[in-house]
Length: 199
Image 1 (cartoon, rainbow, N blue to C red):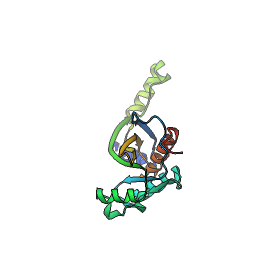
Image 2 (tube, rainbow, N blue to C red):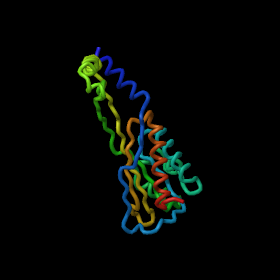
Image 3 (cartoon, helix red, strand yellow):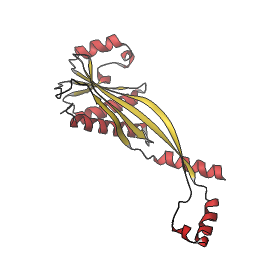
Image 4 (cartoon, helix red, strand yellow):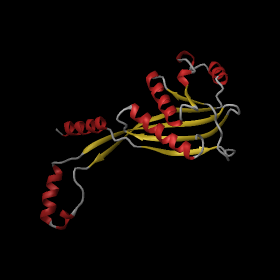
């Protein structure tokens, strides 16, 4: 019976999702003293999942602004994404002066036991403790499993072939990959705008 209860608890958490995205680290190049004036940014999400790649790139483009940003899937065909030289030719031919690249770098699970009862005022009386103590014996709590995704975002100066800015974000138990991509895109775009990478 206890296994059944724990199983239902885990399924409930995974089904409802409790996603929360935050930037865990941000780095910028020492020479990045004034905001770069990018005129044409290529937005790239590295994933074998075509639909995921397109959704992520389109969302980031919409947040940065389609006047300056372009999704890489419209520039680099799917059958050429792993060919560095062909990608380089297309990026330079397209006149892009900056690249924003996103990629999932880690996925892991964290299991937490949540007890059935907590300490409270019932400890003040032996009979309060008696009732809650025995109640706890038959209320074992449950196990919660969270899936944690880490996404890195990098900003490059194409002409100088230099990394200007980098961040890593963490999303806990997103209800869907699309939801995670949305949250990461919003968090990263807001931070990039704050630091003058995009206007």
